[in-house]
Amino acid sequence: MAANDSSVRVINDRVIIVQVFISLFLCINFLLITVFFMKDFFYTTMRYIFFALTLMSDCVFLILTDVLLILIYFRFSIHMSLCLIVYMALSVHTFVTPVTLTVMTLERFVAICMPLRHGELCSTRSALHCILIIHAVSSLPCVVVLSIFFAYVNRSFYTQSALCSSDIFILHNWQGHLRSAISQFYFLVMVIVIMFSYLKIMKVARAASGQNRKSTWKGLRTVVLHGFQLLLCLFQLWCPFIEAAVLQINLVLYINIRYFNYIMFILSPRCLSPLIYGLRDEKFFVALRSFVLCGLYKKQLSN
Image (cartoon, rainbow, N blue to C red; front, side):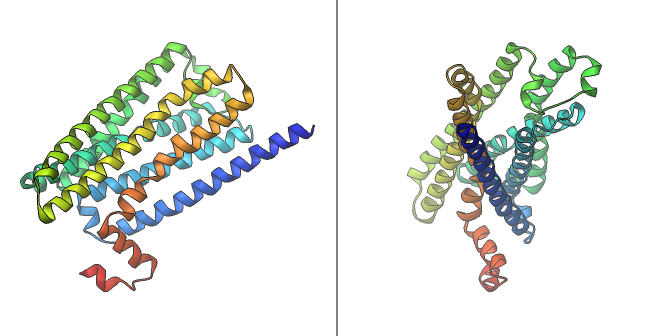
C-alpha cells in the first residue's frame, strides 16, 4: 500500500513538473511572438518570419501534447472524431518545426554564400510561399498514415469514445514501421541539407575577412544549433522502439524512460528556438529588452 502511494505521488509530481515547464515555455513563446508583431522589420524579413512560425508551431505542439497527457492521466475518454482532429494537428506540427529549421538553414546558406541573390530569393513573398510548402510537406506523413487507417476501420469506430493516443491509429505493426520509415527519410534529407549548408558556409568563412568573416562564423554557429535541435527531434523517432523493448523487461523502468524521453526529446527541442533566435539575435534581443523594460531602450532600438 505504501509503495502504491509512493508511486502515485511520484507520478503526480512528474505531471506537475511538466505543467510548470510547459507553462513557462508557452509564456516565453507568446512573449516572443508579441515582440515579433511589434516591428515591421521582423514580419517582413524571411528569417524572422520562419522564427515566428517555429514559435507558433511549438506552442500548438506543446498545448496538444499537454492536453493528451492530462486526458490520459485522468483516464478521460473523448469522442474518436475529436481525437482524430487532435491527432492530425499534432502529427502536422510534429514536422513543421524541423522542416522550418531546414528552410532557415537554407536561408542562412543563401545569405552567406549567395548574398547578391538573397534579396530576390528570400523576399516576404517567397517566405509566404515557403510556409505553404512547409505545411504541405509536413502533412504528407499524416496523410499516408490516415489513408491506411481509413481503409481498415468501420464507420462505427468514429462514434466510439476512448483514451486519445496516436497509437490507436496504428492497427498493424507494419503501419508503425511505415510511419517510422517515412519520418526517418524526412530527417535524413534534413540532415543532408544542414550538413551541405554547414560545409558551404564553412568554406566561405575560411575565405572571408574582417566583418564578413565575423558574420559568416555567426551564421555557421546558427547552422550548428539548428543541427543540434534537429538531432534531438530525430531521437524522438527512436523513442517508441526503446520504450517497447524496455516494456518487456520492467514496467517501472519503462515509465521512467518514457518520462525522460518526453522531457528530453519532445519538450526540449521545442524550447530551443527562443534561445537560438530570440536571445542570440541582436536586433530581436534589443526589441525584446525594450518591450520587457517598457520602452526604456526605445531610443537604442530605433538606432
